[in-house]
Each structure stands twice: as C-alpha cells, then as structure tokens.
Image (cartoon, rainbow, N blue to C red; front, side, top):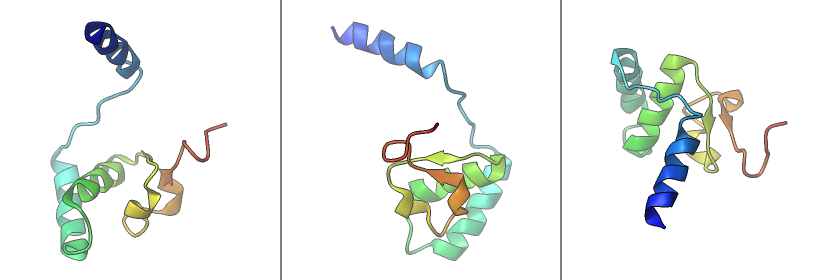
Length: 84
C-alpha cells in the first residue's frame, strides 16, 4: 500500500515544475534577511525569495507568513479560495 501511495504522489508531482534555488534567489534572500531577520522563519524567507526572483506566485494556507514579504497579489490560498 505504501508503494502505491508513493507512485500516486510521484505521478501527481509530475504536474508541477521544480523551481531551483539559484544565485538570483540568494541575492533576494540576503536582502529579505537583512530586513526581516528576527521576525521571519528562514524557510518563509527562502520561499519568498524564490517567488520574488522568479516572478512566481506562492500558494499557501498561511498567507500571513508572507504578508510583509510579497505583494498581496503574489500570495494565494487555494484552500479557502480555490482558483476559478
């Protein structure tokens, strides 16, 4: 059963593109860390840096974690507000 779940998960993930953490992301991360060092989790800063550097949208149920990191239009919650 666990093997079947793993296969299903792998198939589902093929629908998505993996976004690498590259040099431009690191540059944005450095700027975000200087501004939000004590108030934000490092993982949230990394996610925001990747989104900003690549022009991506963050899909999360925890929008409050990104409220002062990204513009509101770049953070969406598909659980409470499914895409149309």
